[in-house]
Image (cartoon, rainbow, N blue to C red; front, side, top):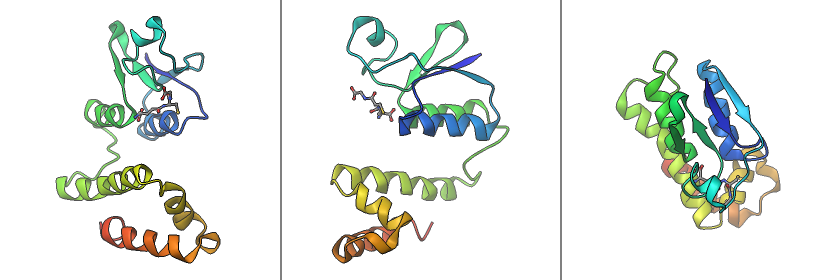
Length: 139
Ligand SMILES: N[C@@H](CCC(=O)N[C@@H](CS)C(=O)NCC(=O)O)C(=O)O
């Protein structure tokens, strides 16, 4: 059975977990896996991070985004992305926008902008609104 290695406090882990649950894929979890640069863990996770998935026969995959793409291809019966390639890529732009905002240190403002508009400083909100108009709202 597919094994998801990592822990629930990790958003990356939860992203994969939600995909597994939504797609109805049977899996088990190993919460004892921790990020580490120890050789033992690096042999399972090349960057030493969580999450990873382990498949029957000892095959493994790391990186939450890559894992989700794998799940989408390997278990096509309940797709999480639109079948139309253009619509699927338009949806993926939300992820790119979030990563870009994180790199620029603006992810907290972006999240607050989406979730709790009333508590965000107007300047942050303006910047978020600009990004939302570019990427997410017009998918
Ligand atoms: N790009 C990775 C990021 C995973 C990641 O950063 N996981 C954290 C736990 S939430 C981790 O393992 N951090 C340890 C480290 O960065 O060395 C993914 O999407 O899976």
